[in-house]
Image 1 (tube, protein in one colour):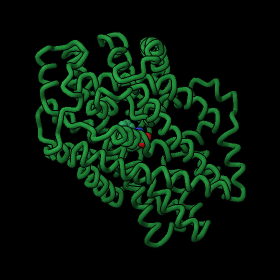
Image 2: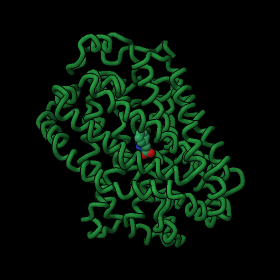
Image 3: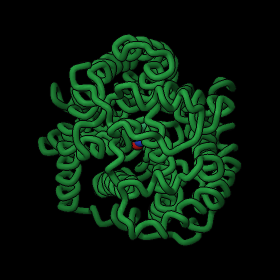
Image 4: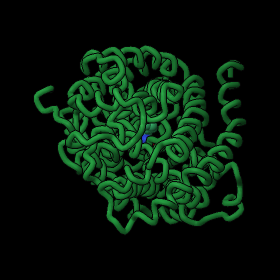
Length: 472
Ligand code: PHE
């Protein structure tokens, strides 16, 4: 793997101030780099597109009443998502370090703890993400081998927790670890370049097919006709913002880490826009699959009373009712979901592995196996207990990610020297005036919104924790 290491940014000095000697180290060491720009973009899209788009997006949209939520989600992607992604890129590419190092190098040792928060978020997300990905594998294989189960709810109860869930979680983690061990180019980039186009094709094909279903109209109406009262609710706004972070892989150093392998010739605003647009598109198109299918079969009640498992029960039920075509469509759906989950899991593990390599000079293979084993062990808990899974998801998505994003916004907005210079490097000249707007969004607008998000999601977090400790 070390054969194709080379310095990504042509050895230019990072344009941020920090501990001078450390900066020298950062620019001298050979660091892995993406092979092509497209490789970076697909890897970042691979990180962003995942269970968050095809599963979490649909169930939260259902829970929050449809189109109004979608509008707020688009707004939050534009106003909070893209600016924070650009901030992470500025830090990662500017320092060419993974999260802890990037923060320490730029802001001094006081800021390293924010990097540790990122790492903790990565570990926790992957621990439950892998469990859900295990269910997905299970459904795909079941669809292929013998068709979807007739007793959908019972089947879900059987496989979603306990030994079966642990087994598939383990298998999924082994695949993830294997890819990350391969390195940036031969592991992550290669996997993304092959798998992401396949995912796009499948999702678009499924949406076209769904439009042919009799009765799909009600699904489109629910999904696309906004209820303007919901638009005004703070709670929906907060849900939209936290969905945007989760879906764009923000607030935990993931985009930061990926951009640390990126050349300084690329335009960061352009990449952030392309990646966010692709991420939104997959979420939106997935909705164009899920809602028509669910409504065509009259299953909307099950999804409206949304729980973690709703889609895992109603969708396979729908596929079963559709007979032979349903089986093929269902297998394709779960295959796309699996691809999305895998490319996201890779990026979650890479956040941890990259920090181990940079900070402690641990070889990649050892780092991937070590971190992977730790995460696999932690994941046994959500694999054993669905309430634990919900609680970890709530704590990380509602607290860790917004706090991480808030820290990133304030750090890049107020502390980093000349973030505009880093972001402008490689970008079109005409963009420069806009970058002032970006900086002030990051300084003022984003923090205000994040504080709102944090405060209004506290009750939901408390509820999830009560479900766990209250024996619910
Ligand atoms: N963005 C991924 C998804 O939508 C999840 C994720 C979050 C991945 C944070 C990496 C970091 O499924």
